[in-house]
Image (tube, rainbow over all chains, first blue to last red; front, side):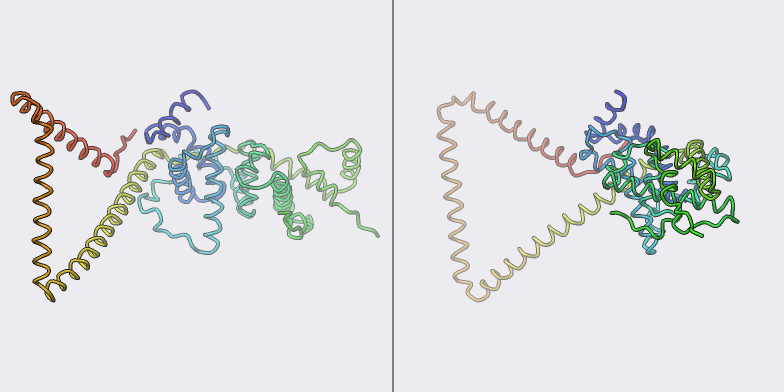
Length: 200
Length: 183
């Protein structure tokens, strides 16, 4: 964290929302990207990213300065998105939860749609097939290059659980990718990890 | 025909740990003969490359402003909730007082004579207390010459007024929602 960011953080800790706004300017991209990868929908990703920053602002006093600020934010975002995915699964997400925002204004920046190549769309589609915690671990590992320890810390898991989840996720992703590229090749079910039970 | 067990090789293909030399050699030998595992390895390499080349997706412009609006809205809701709670608390206290006073009023209706005596007793006690307080204050002020006593009283009144205004300002600052500047 740079000296300027530390100053903004200290301002935010004293209740200055303006100081925290500067931090949002810096971290909005990574947080939004994680939310988008987790939820796969721009409106839900916007809502999740906004909520992440609100929770972070309210819980700023609980932030441990020994940890990187970005990891702390990503941890809040990941937990929120995992909860949202579970709630969505049980049909508990309300459309009226965020009445302030006009969905028309929330489509990602113009660059996003062009950047999202076919391959990227395929990756996004594959990600959504993973278990939410595995998905969060994959995004943290391969988009943000967090260490096993940081992922474990962020997702409240043990390091061995993270390794196990990532291994399973890699198996599933590679299997699904192979299936899509070569539908003629028979793929054994254990690529999808269905026969394996999580070790945690 | 015995089917080969692919699982250890697939684990090695997907692991991020460094393989032992003998494991790496066994994997290479297996990959030479196993089309399925070769394709799995190629898929994983393609996927990793796709992860690394994928551009992060940015939110729509004005994200910070939307966050500030949302924060202000949440504060407003929180403030409204606090006001409602305060109102409910005050209403509760008023209701309890009403019950107590109603009880006393009922007493008054049952035995007005005793209640009148009690009120007279309370009033007399109040007058005696005020009288005693005045005597104590005069006892303090007596040694001070008349010319000094008046400015002292003015200063004391000034300090009391200032403290009252300060109290009101602090109360307002603590109870009203703060506004935030937009970028």
